[in-house]
Length: 248
Image 1 (cartoon, rainbow, N blue to C red):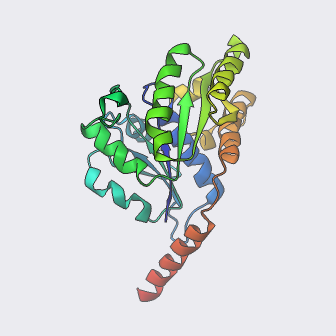
Image 2 (cartoon, rainbow, N blue to C red):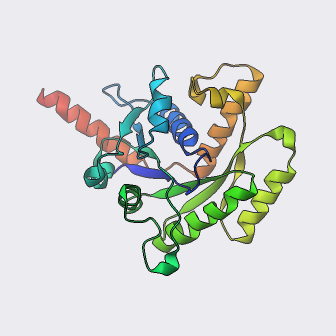
């Protein structure tokens, strides 16, 4: 079954779309293609605003498949059965709901239904956080109200850090995560203009110093996040493809 990796944070603008696309690209680059030439990796957009879809539409020669699942809540439960080794899912934010009210913190609207369907089957959650105080509270809510009660493995990653500001902001954000007992990646995804231009994924960056540094962050994070456990799925997909060729 496909490994599902959900990018999740109640706060918008923390980089869920950017990370889902570039992690998908790195994973696809490392994994290669199926015997039929199709990718083993997909990026799925569960965000009705469609940020990752908009970004993907601007790219040429995508190394992964792009899926729009934002209007298909009923079939999200079938995501793991699709012929991929890994699927990275970009998700929307959602309105704050106090769990003390007795209601599900994800709410009862379309956003909540989408997120619940995803979290019921995800293998892990990646929680991006910015080095800004106003990102801490929604990140805490995401983890404490939604992720931890479901027992889902998760990892926080510090994103969009401008190195010119110095390490103090990174150290403060990491200390905040550690005080709460949150596993936080050693890799910090730095802010680069080439990321925000959105014209390429990291595997398509040029071989100059700046773009190589920008690319390095995502390869390091993919390695650190441990995107393992797909070899059996890759073998299964390959066997299915070969069986289809024989039947044809």
